Length: 445
Image (tube, rainbow, N blue to C red):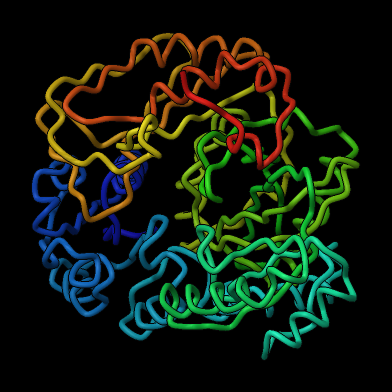
């Protein structure tokens, strides 16, 4: 087992990893930018190293600075968390070259799943259902027009190196295609330094349901049930839950088998997630694979009583997994609390937190790095907390969440708490009647 792990991340996920490392008897190294010098992950780690200026490119994305921090502290492993360099194959490669274990999959696995077209081709070969689409990257608007005509509208144009909704455009009719093709290509180039784009049939009234998986270094893979991530805004998840209110035992078994096939196709090692779109007829299609721990991993942890960070570290250390497939035993719902103004088009709201009171009570988990007096910097993701409520039934979990949100006080900045409060009272949400388009018609009062 590792003696010391450097956490190449910040905020809530860094703190989450530190907690598990402490329980495992592993020493931790926090890294931080000058903007994060007062962050809790810096205070709770055994050691802390400043790695640069506030801008991510000069700190959390600066590989030489991260490697220097690992070497001067004699860390024998690096945990990347999520975001930043978590799915950067070059970073994983450099860790290996320096004799430091990257806690995640191999560089080749990251590359194969990071490129959306390569991932899709791999899934087709493995027999995993995929959304009909272009056979390769699109070279011109004329080629895009031809492919769209063959598939039928609506279609969706996607960046092959994409994520977070960047380089993604839905096209409903031919007259809109060329403009959207050019916009997607330009956005992909600006966001990922890669303007490769492809096209898929647009699935109407979809659910976004993902399967958590784990694979070890010995070829064994298992699934740890599903999460429903359909409540989104501009392709960014807002609420996640398990089990999905749309799921049936038969569908879970089929999707679980497909997820295991997908991971086994690349001999995947580490924890990861296979994301699917599920249509109203419960047909499901592979979307992408996340080769990292996810923001919403705590939802799965609570419904199957399982520490996914611990499992990730154990896999990296060469410990075999049990190979058992899991079924949710409880119901859990997570709300992401962002420092944004939901009454002003979710505009970011960085600044100083003057008052903070977090909810508690039976079946309430809060993962956060904030405190009264903490200054939310404007340089990073706006998420400041995750609330998870756990209960025997979905209705009870929603009621518990409604109560927990009413206790959550954050003053000094705007947050998305009012949005979540109204969502928990929404009749369609409570009945499980929603798709990925649900928030488009959702009006705050």
